[in-house]
Length: 120
Picture 1 (spheres, rainbow, N blue to C red):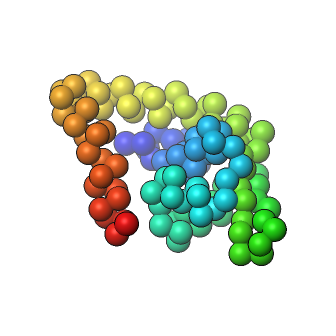
Picture 2: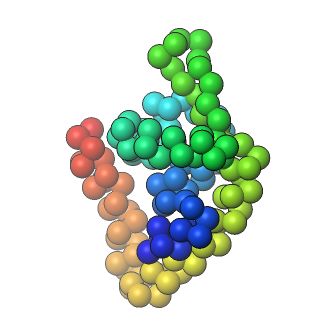
């Protein structure tokens, strides 16, 4: 549902999550970004590559060559502003279809499921 809603912007929900995280947290090490989003490094790299190619994020090397920092660009902020209502619309449609109890249980339990699935 999210990918379908974001498709007109050529954005996937994982990429939306990356942009939203960077907007909220500011420049982040790729490692910290992955941990914050509970994304495996290869999945994160797949999401970052097109964002960088489109100019929606930028990266720079850290003082340690193994570190890379990523931040959202102005273009990425503008895209996120357009994407937010589309994402919110899907959230609203889902809330209408699911009881409040189920919705709350899902959002309290989902982080635990993600951590368990990641092997942490």
